[in-house]
Length: 257
Image (cartoon, rainbow, N blue to C red; front, side):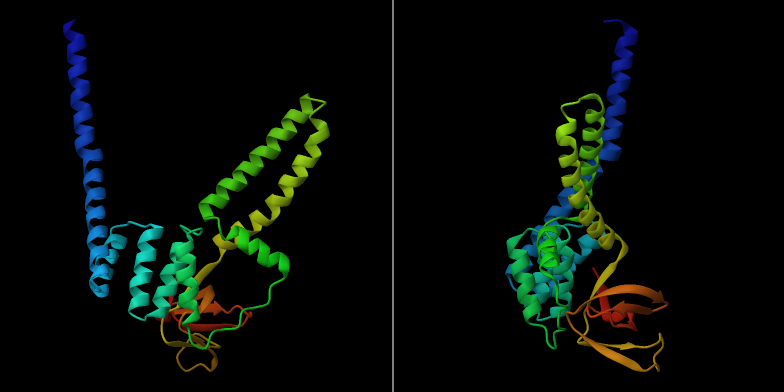
């Protein structure tokens, strides 16, 4: 084998080894460490040491790890501690990542049933209820992919129909069907991205007309209620209830989903 070729191969091996050591190996080690922490936290949960388990789970969040199972386990710890607000908060976080999980939905519904002074939900039309039932199965990323596929389908069908006379017979029907799916999907995705939902984590939170302590109380929110954050002013958040009423509350009274 020529000397120059050997030198190049050796240089390539050295570069690969350095890359593996500097970039790949630390990520593998970090992943392994995270897995061990997760197992330790789960073991603590099984032993009934919920506060200790939460400390372990929280350490993973601080390191930047996020998963539906992590949030789900944290919510289970809080429900065992009878901390309904935080339980619902983390169930809601988990639902955004693993929305189709049956155990998650059941535990979330159970936590909601434990809330006191539950806010009456707004009455939805049959169509809205069906849309919610379908789209709640999609994560935000999943819905984005679905929309991308619909755009691709419409573009492809239009292109083919230009050059193929036979395809024109079906192009209109396909495009119409895709458009009917595209419109509600785009609206749901826009709502998810543009709105910031939150859950009341304190026993109760007084919503005021203006963002300061001495402002008149407009209404009271209770632990576990879900609201939408529509404005911020220092440590005050303007939130909207499901019935449309808005008010200002302290930011330490709620947890953003």
